[in-house]
Length: 234
Image 1: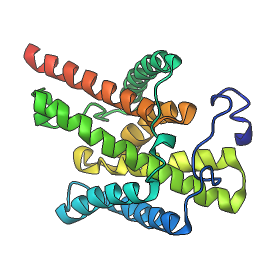
Image 2 (image 1 turned 135 degrees about the horizontal axis):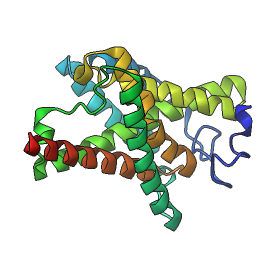
Image 3 (image 1 turned 90 degrees about the vertical axis):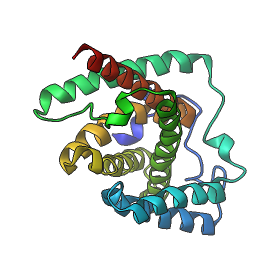
Image 4 (image 1 turned 90 degrees about the horizontal axis):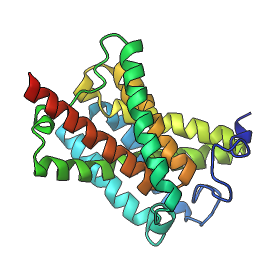
């Protein structure tokens, strides 16, 4: 069933994810580095924001390994936007808001709009910090996804199944990454992890991390604006 995802129109024709099928090829040492850092990022997600050393280690190691592993191949990850991408980005942002409202209604007590007090002040510096932070977050999800895709595909050879497994793997730990904000692992994984499936799909369909980044950025900035305006009305 999962191997029919592409033929069902969920992905664009004549596109595929980079690296996992040696398209292009990454050396074994680069894959070892990606696997090691992915394990560290996954485990460290539960301590992100709580432990300064682990948080800093995750931040730095992701950047260093990304530069090492993807050097000369960043064009396979971030691409020039196509005309259709702009409409798709708008649709994904709308989809994110709908999903957020849906989760809020289904999960009583789930604070799906949790933001720290600084973000609500909506200063230029906070907007810049958010833009930079989301670059790291999108790279975080990409590294976990592409590494899980590579490993699972090597064992099963079933592309569709592996895409689903890799997506769930990346989103689960991405949710855990927000535990320090939400203080509840279940809500963090469900509302932020699986709740960002629309943003994840933006990459899965286009194979362009710039598209998912713009969806993520625009959604977060719009949410910050709405929260800021709400504080003015209180």
